[in-house]
Length: 180
View 1: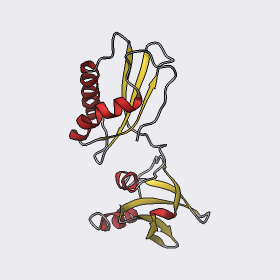
View 2: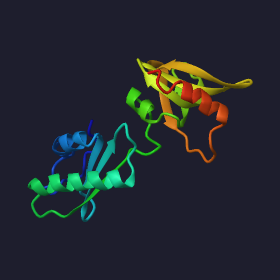
View 3: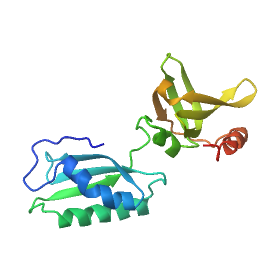
């Protein structure tokens, strides 16, 4: 669950694993999980980055609250007098969608999907559950649902969109809202 080994860690700064353990409980109570923790001791001051995700998207107020929680936990831990910058952030749109929860959290977003057999398509994530992901995909005269077993998805990444979805896409998306 943690990642991000650091260069030589200054005495007093916790490891990424220790930080994950320290922050897990308060983040979980707030409804978020820790995706990754990095400690970059090569910078002056050192930088601690905590990547959090949850079923409710992170907004600026939530990031500020999680930052406050993390800061309180670090203040209570013995970090000595080592200076550091703390950053709490979300995974971002470039994070590969690898788990069912990633697809669920990206519902209604457009994704480029690469399947095990070499096929690639772009579709809007409609639902995820039971080891499957439903996508709204273009069809010859409109839109259709395409169900793909999660095990068949080799890579998927959310696409940045600059225009609103078509009304027909949204209608089909709405029909899947409570299915899983």
